[in-house]
Image (cartoon, rainbow, N blue to C red; front, side, top):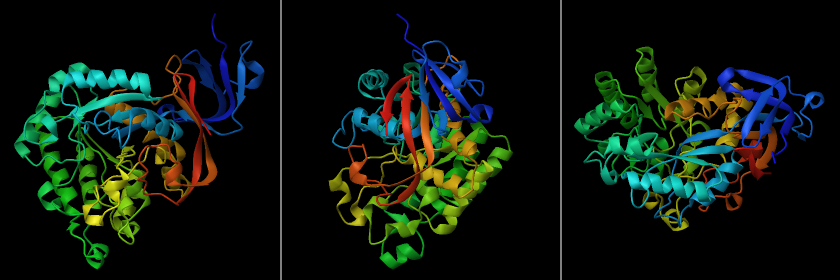
Amino acid sequence: MSSPVHALVNARLLDPATDTDTRGGLLIKDTKILDWGSHIAPDNLPDGALVEDCEGHCLAPGLIDAHAYLCEPGKEHRETMATAGDAAAAGGVTTINAFPATEPVIDDPALVEMITRRAKKTCAVNVCVTGALTKGLQGTEMAEIGLLAEAGVVAVSDGQFAIGNINLMRRALSYASMFNLPIIVHAEEPVLAAGGVMTAGRTATFMGLKSIPSCAEAILVERDIRLVQMTGARWHAAHLSTRDALDTIRRAKNDGLPVTAGTAPHYHALNDLEVGEYRTFARVSPPLREEEERLGVIEALKDGTIDIISSQHLPQSADSKRVPFAQAKPGVIGLETMLPVSLRLYHNKDISLLSLLRTMTVAPADLLGLDAGRLKNGAPADIILFDTEKPWQVDGSLLKSKSKNTAFDGHLLQGRVLKTFVSGKTVFEL
């Protein structure tokens, strides 16, 4: 017997793919979007429909997190697919792109297939996989990119490790272009960054910490842009944080090169003062920058130089953070706070709500080649309902991730996800 239509009505419909921002509704039939638009109202619904009043809140495509570490297999003490899925659902993320820093590293097609199968069984949201660019993430020997592509990876990357060997990077770009796979890079020249724990500047000097010059980011971006010119390969910088690097991206885009850029909420919302009294939960890679750089990130989001906001979700155990700052492992969790923190840009009138959502829906979908991130008849009903105004305070101990290393503990935020659907099924409700 066919299930009844689920009607979501009286919503603010937001679809960045079609520049839609209107009052209307959406119909779910089984697992798919049956119809959506301003014509769907309480007085013209199919017979027997189950009606849900959205009370004017925002109804949008589910978010796609283009950069997250799920830690499974091998590091389940930090995160599992199940806990990451719960955190993602609470944050409105319906698709996670899982990065390859697992144990073993995702550099083998069999691992891609295993992770895909396990995710379908245990994770509340969709999971796609980025394969390793080099074997073991060691930066010395290229992984079997062709076989990984056949196994279904959506990109290749060495995650938080930069490729120092320029000839290896050139070959990798050439090879990846044969399969139309994007290479996602950590843009930080590894020799300049070696041993550094925070950005160079007054704060690092005052605290006596070894620093990383901001030009380390720009130098690697400049290098790789030249290689993209040679190879024509698709290239994405995952989490840019400096004006100089972003200026290089602007020039490359103006030249028509196939490059895209991303950032994470902590780079547009926080600066290096967040480190405070050696606060290890604010240690990330690349490091939090000075205020002028943070403002540069916001400018790049305004003008479209930055295409994607991703969580850069990297769970770390309590033991790896409860040590002196220089010894702490970099990384923060972010699946649950990606949208609420980024809504600051909307509330501060830095960017429109549609433009903000585009960075977390259509843009990552296009980068990864996913048929997602859009409201489309017949597509899986991966959608979210959220309130742009709802105030709340982040309590790291209450977040759903297994690890609690959030940089936003105690922060007051405005905006929260109310409900998340994956293939028409409710996976989170506030």
